[in-house]
Amino acid sequence: MNHYPQAWGRPRDDVYGAYDHSYLQSAQPKTHTQSPAVTGTSVLGVKFKDGVVIAADNLASYGSLARFTDVKRIRTFPPNTVVGFGGDVSDMQYLDRLLQSLDIRENYLSSTDHVLNAKNLHTYLSKIMYRRRSDFNPLWNMLLVAGLDDEDKPFLASADLLGTTFSSPTLATGFGAHLAQPLLRRLMPNDEASVKDVTQEQAINAVKECMKVLFYRDARSMDKYSIAVITKDGVDLKEDEKLENQSWAFADQIRGYGTQVN
Amino acid sequence: MTSIGTGYDLSNSVFSPDGRNFQVEYAVKAVENGGTCIGIRTKHGVVLACEKIISSKLLKPGCNKRISTIDRNAGIVTSGLLPDGRHLTTRGRDEASSWRQTYKAPIPMSALASRLGGYVQAYTLYSSVRPFGVTAILGGWDSEAELGVDGQVGNGPAAGAGGKVDDSSTKRGGPGLYMIEPSGLYWGYYGAATGKGRQAAKGELEKLDLAAPNCSLTLKDAVLEAARIIYVAHEDSKDKEFELEMTWISALDGPTKGRHEPVPKELLEEAEKHAKKSLEPEDEDEDEDEDDMEE
Image 1 (tube, rainbow over the protein chains, first blue to last red):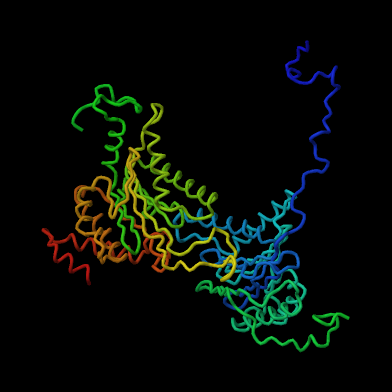
Image 2 (cartoon, chains in turn brown, green; image 1 turned 180 degrees about the horizontal axis):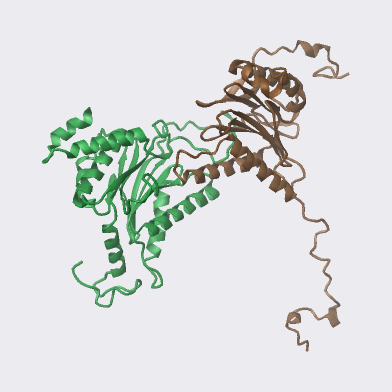
């Protein structure tokens, strides 16, 4: 008899041979999400002298399929912050719930003189993103955080799935980083120094114009969008806007666009 | 208490021959010496108010709040042993957040009261624990809007397959006010009072006729009344200084948009001034008091 307890109740090695540990082991190492599934495309943000404008369309694509057409990718955080999400929609929902529970916990203190502003929230979100990428399990999103900082100045910054942060008077994620950002920069010839000269109306118009350009050229975009204006007075969020004054005349000249395949 | 425990009051899980659990009754005694707390439920929302006795002049005014937020839409105030109240509050918050984890929606007031009631009751069953020395008043507002799940991104098709059914006639949500006693017993109330001044406060609450279907009390009236009732109830222990603390929860179209918040400073000051004024005449006349309300 084998007197070692760890061998009791097991097939005997001298009869069956040593146990082959390669069984019940997957050949592959453990993996996490390698690519997003349902995605949202660009988010645009522009500062102006008293606040920030942020916009994103209402589409969630499943690959190239326009799957969900009323998806709200602009999320608010009380009292005065807005987060715009590009990338994976389920990860956005996770983050949204996380922010909701953060808001609830913040209110446990029931003190009105301490609130989380956009800057605090951006720091928090970027750390979450970096933590998750360090776990090799990134949240597949590109975020824009818009609002006011602790001096009530306009605040706009981004965080991506690697935890990289970036801040600029105009920002765009995804396709918009290539198509809209150069157009938006025309508003700000002197970068941060130009913000004080930009009015709310100018900023809104620039964003709307860029949303149109993106709809022309980004095949994962849609003509319905959400736009939020954040000022000291609060957040004005409109979630069912439609692109106006579209002109497809330019498409006439382009080969390989629309119905002209060659 | 008429009889003494005669040996049956030393342990929780032991009944006396006449069917009483003395430990629970002693816990009720602990509550009877706590600061007065009240809750008023109106059609438009709920007001919680608390008489916070100042135990030391060295404490910073306006701090060490006694009314706590459990979830966005729910608040709790406890009377009795403060640390027990703190613990119950924490448990309420845990229940609310675990409800959200499971159902992706805010916890209904009835469910919150049930969970906390069950928790308090469990502390009357075992000899290794003592019952809670607090009576808690829970106030909240269940959203009347059709709520999606937390984190929901869209509404789906407006019509056709998977489209929405018009259910605008369905009535949902509304105010909720519950009081949980040390025995774990909880009822829903129109107006609830506990603590030292509860008898006076209950008398005043009954006069408001909150149960009447045509009760015209607005939320602001309820705030003023709550302040006055706390001041009336304080009359018995006039020697001690106190701070008035009030929070409220309104409907989604009301001042707090369905959230549990402290009553704004201006309104709180107005309510305090009003309360002090209504106490001034030696033998206060009810009619005169009513007139004050309408100003």
